[in-house]
Length: 281
Image (cartoon, rainbow, N blue to C red; front, side, top):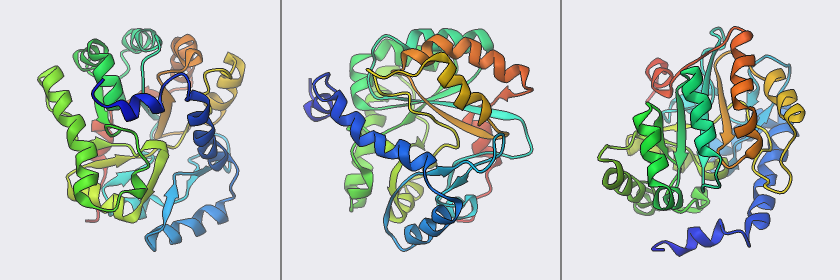
């Protein structure tokens, strides 16, 4: 394979090591107070590195992010939609394919639910037919970088752009379409300078307002555990992050979408969310 570094990082041998690194983000999401999160947004403004984090203050309400919506808007970024509209924006991070994406696409098609799949180079190299299916069925395919690095460590605009443009080129070659300029930082790691770079390159950066620990292959949550988090914490305007590698997600998605619909929610496209955002650039 041409890009062996990414393949190595996501090989079976190193899956547990990658999971341990990602577990940091999981503890960050649920373990910080609102005061800590608000305080940390000031350090980001001082150009520090950060990992996207959430604090859930009340079930059914928008969580507090470690950067405010107003702060993110100046960089053409967001993590949630209108808190007064019962819309859910479904997003999936796709680092590699392990047999779950087809079932996920089937459930989305059944519910006529648009989604965004943030893919990496490895996924596009190994699963072009699934990527083509995503596009053909009306889903957005977004940019999760080619090699899935810690983008907050990349200091030059040229290197930052290359991680995005290399994936754009391969997507164009594979599908015959241009990739949407929608970006999600790997592991949610970012800096103020990264946000500026993405904005200046014409990208919209999408974080998330609801996620759960669904990526550990040897420790997949039960349906009950998944529902406890995903139903109680859903909120108007939610940008939901799920991983397409999760067998639990594949198994429960049909029922999960049904439950959310029964709660009065509809599913919106990130295009809709992007068009509603008023940037203060």
